[in-house]
Length: 206
Length: 328
Image (tube, rainbow over all chains, first blue to last red; front, side, top):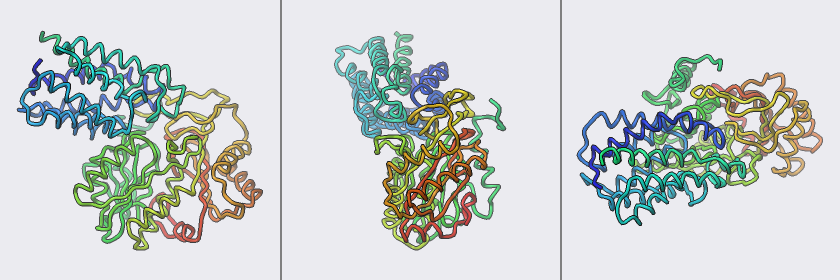
């Protein structure tokens, strides 16, 4: 696996398409355990990312990730803005200046991103947040002897589904206490779309 | 959905423009932002006070910008925290060299975004301090308590304290003391509709009410059959007083806050019973505020806020304010 700036850009564009298609679903998930704006916010944020990345050609992967981070941070709002923004910012820093990244770099970037989410949100694993998708995906990427996009997507999907049984300890969902169990966390769902989008563009190329 | 709006995506920006146009002698919009500032910001050598949060709670927070209260307020999307870059702009415009106090309601999004903005401000050499408001007693776990109408008292007292020429630390202390001494509880009869989603944020049956509901429709303590104004007042007061444990003889400020579509008439009915109960408990009412201070779009319902006063807080509460939503 080798990704250059154009591939990362393509990844973000495809993520945007996926989020737009699932905007209503994400909002419905958030209405069950939050305040019902996750889909609206993520759709606005990723559309802004797509627009921003279209403005120029990038030389390095880290620059694409940095612009993605800054745009998400300023356009998503809510808790998701700083959390997704911090994730991409840490990823960018982890691969700073690189024109291409390989599977090892990617694993490192996702691990740093997961740690960034935990630091920023003061969240631990199993508190029913997006980090419950990022951490298992990072773990899979580190453990895999060879990068397999489909297996990464599957890992992220299973991780997202596991959030269904968790009881929220952080964020607005925490007010629902035990009632938050039984619903997938919306941030975990949009994180899955992100990894699924990458698997899909890599699949098309392969 | 029936609303007086244009494109839902532009609602917040258009509202901010409307606010700036309504009170040009007091406030202005910071260009290219959703920040409302005092028209004379920054005030040199005065601690700046910045607050904000999701929109939909008007007059909070832009209505509290003015001499004697906030120096700037940041409006996020409806019920969504503003982003760090916008908050940073508010901090920069509020800083007159004495530092800036951030008044943050205790929601994950608000805390995350304001903290990021504070980091960015510190990196630019602006000193900041923060106070997190968590007056909603409906949440048992104190660190997770939400910030609701009690926030207005924090704005008022911090703003008045800053006007005395106090340092950032002194203003922060005064604000924290308000948080320690203020308690609120709300209830709702009907949900509200976020313009961009077009759907009610939750459902309540025809004969149902919810005690302890959050200002974004977060779950409260319990749903039950609709009761009379006196019974509602009694239930809210019991829970607030049980949590606050104010000694008898305490002097209080009282706020009966409408959530958006509750007639002032009904708020006064609630107030009538609240005042009776306070007399029975031998608690003294120093000042009462009845009206819409922290709303939740068109939600029907109210909240009751009690703030225990001391001599300093009385003086600061009485200090003049030119903020359009809190003129005195």
